[in-house]
Image 1 (cartoon, rainbow, N blue to C red):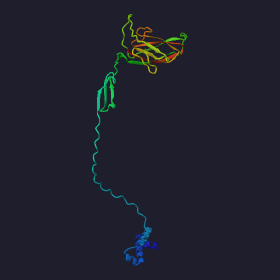
Image 2: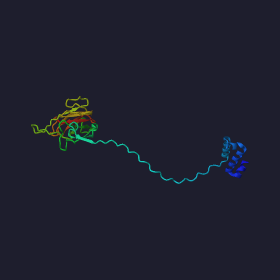
Image 3: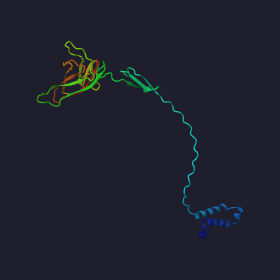
Image 4: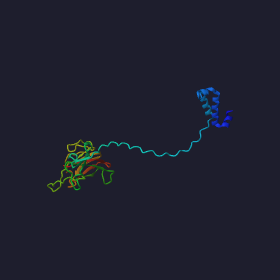
Length: 262
């Protein structure tokens, strides 16, 4: 029956008809109260929901609205702290023996940096008194020939990259700097003039110390001053030639040296 009514009146008309029918059945109660009771309303809603149609398709988007009014400017932020400048000064003798300058952040001594002058040893100069030079040395043999016996002598020159001050001539007209050379084997204890070791070479002023790190069938014989060609008279201003005796065909030795200017 409801289907026939819906076909006749449509969904909207059907709902109106149901409301009218409910009101008629309730009789005078509707008239007296001026409207539907709560129970009647629920019945109408229930019937309306049952016969309500499905939601229609979403309609097209509306036109974009006009732009809103500009917002107010925000408040200004607080000012940052002022940056710090730099301070420069003159380096002390302990900071830069050859002179120099210092720079630091203003008021912050912990940031101090030193800028020292270049080396005081220009090309053609000599090693200042008390300054040191270090280096390495090595000798060895890999075999023998029929002309060479089981033992022989080899030479290991030690050249100073910065020369010493030239000394005067002796009574024979020979240059004699008289820089003593001390050769220390790996087991030899330090001496007064050579208080260091291979790993930490050291020499007192006026000494050339030759330290041994490894030695296999090698014996130190003597040193030769290249300026006068004499053996056993120490190093010259430019270096020294070390003479070693190699006792076997595979003898070898190596080490370090240090020179401190007198």
